[in-house]
Structures are given as structure tokens and as C-alpha cells.
Image 1 (cartoon, rainbow, N blue to C red):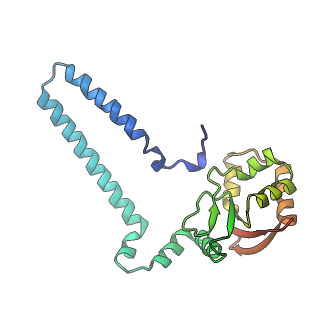
Image 2 (tube, rainbow, N blue to C red):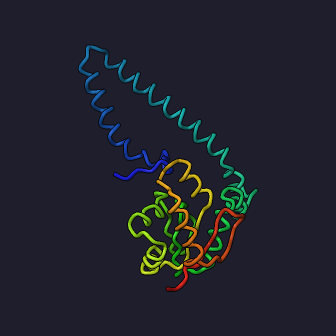
Image 3 (cartoon, rainbow, N blue to C red):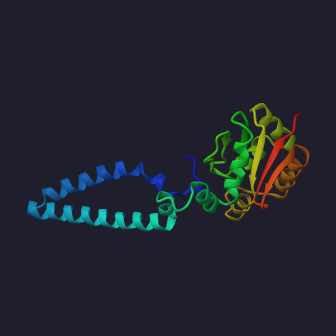
Length: 207
């Protein structure tokens, strides 16, 4: 089964709740067989459910307040300004990608997000696209040719994502991998736009 340290998000744990529901039902069934008053069990279940709802409501309220969404909902801040403030250079890069047209295919390196992209954006969900390409294809020439065959027109690179992947040891980076990346940028890609040194959009050269 695939796993990713970079994608540890609470929403990805939602499928486990169906299993927890079954376990919880089994636990209540076992408790029901004990010599305990039924009223006490029902009262305990009600109190626990109420506590969970209260704590969840408080957390949602606090998260909503910190997110800065409320001024947007009330009209105090525009949606465009909110996205710019929240997403920074990423949003600027995505806006530039959207201007390439809906028929443009953009491959992401070390960037797992793709919203709100309207083009054919292919995020690096496992943050291992480059490592996998090096392992399976090898040379920069072979990697670029495979991307062309797959219909890729542009490549988006996220500098911080690349550095984080190396520091967290998500993939094994060797000096040869770094040299191959530099060769790919130098010989197979053409810089289209740079956003604060954080994001770069490259055009994939024709073979």
C-alpha cells in the first residue's frame, strides 16, 4: 500500500470511522451483557455523544475563525484577495497556468495540490514523481521524451517542495539525481515564468 509522510491529513482518516462504528457497536453489545442498569448505559452513551459534539463544534468554530473565511462570507474581503493572501505564490502560479488554456497539460514536480487549476494539471500527489522517473527511466532525455509521449506541455516546479522532500528523506536524492535535474532544466525545458523564486513554469521543448 502506498504511503506518504507529506500527505498526512485528517480527512484521509475518514474511512476508518466505519470500522470504529462496528467496534463501538460491539463494545456496547458486550457492555449490555454485563450486569449494569440499562439506564446507566444509555445515560453514559448520551453524555459521551454530547461531549464529542461540543468539542467538535468548538474546534470547527476556532478553525473557521482562524481561516479568515468569515470576512469573505460577509463581503468584507473579496474571494480573489482571500486566495492571494492564503495561497501566496502558489495561487499566482495557478493563475498563470489557467491562462495557458484548458487544453494545456501541466506536470507538477513536488507540488501535491492542483486546485483551483482549470487546465489539465497533474499534481505530484506522492511527491515522488522525479524519484520514480529517475528510477524507471534514468536519463533526463528519456524522462523528457516520456513526458512528451504522455502529452505534457509544461512543467511546474516548487522549490520548497523539493527541499522538503530532501530534508524529510521522502526519497533518496543522490548527487547524480541533482545533476540530472539540472540537465533536464538546462536542455529539455524552457523557463516561461518565475514566481518569487518559489515556483517556476517551464515549457517542455520539442524533441
